Length: 451
Image (cartoon, rainbow, N blue to C red; front, side, top):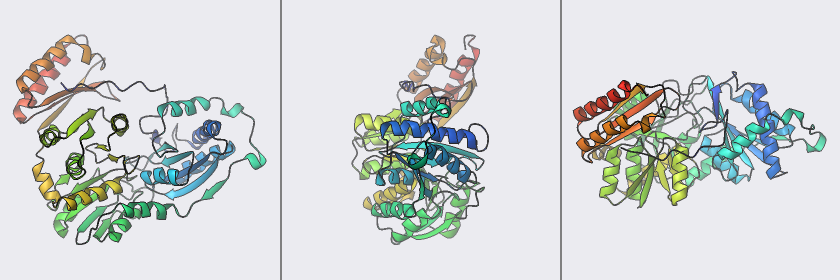
């Protein structure tokens, strides 16, 4: 069974999740009043570290972005922190500008691939990496006391400025990483999101013939039947238009997925294989969701694969701990820590195409080479999802299934993060066999009176 160490318990946080605060915009906690209070608390925490702290804020194209941005800026400036608005910019662009402008922190107002009604607030530290769990917990704790603090007035109050060069600087960085894309015909889905201007410009400047769609955000159409989580239209577009490939970004452009010339999806596992070869990596980090076919192919080429719990945060932590440069997830959220401290969809697309050209291959060949093992996933309702991994009958069932697989596949039991479910995943070369094994393990869990 694929077993992973449980991620170390983060400091207790009520509102911050693995990717910041997310909710329906206008509903608690993403109300203007709450966000202003968060901004004030964040200002106090940041000024304790640097009395001259400044914060940059960027956002995606959601209707609620302006409201939340104004509330956050009001809170920050009320505690003496200077705020610089970057405007609409991909999440990794905010990370980049945080470093370039030497800010104490950066903030992205986005809910990534979620529908427009949702929004979120995510902090970066001065290095452009996600803020630590401990610092997020400290900000939450400070919210309880911020209203009782003495007011900040006069020259001590923070100011707000608009930085009109943000998009140009970030685009310039991306162009510095771009290969020569002359001769490539590319269909591009920008998700009506944060990359709707940046991505087409960068690819066109690199020489590609780009046909970009979903580049007309109206505040409510971000991710609506488009972007990296809705590839149907892009696949059809590539096939009908005889494009060499298609690329799709999500709403905040921190990930990307490809479509080959025949309309086949090329996801994170494919990209990691290609990039590991081109970059001569010794080891690659991914999550337990990556297909075993990737692991087998990398091992055949002398490249180790390390797995973590689901989430780019855990991939990032393992890469840092092991001194590795390449990692990512099937979703197309890849990390190149020798180039950028955070996931960047446009950068990922550029570096993937660079690797493709360096190795003289195509996405069609890559898709056909990495033949995915069949995988089945069953959701089993339980009362205590944490107890499953300790139940002796369940463990015996898993061990019996592993004997049958004889090293040809893998089994993973994972508690749902939001529901009273345990997810039983079995992967292997024989589809009938893995369905039977998954059903056997699920049956044992269902029949246990302890679970």
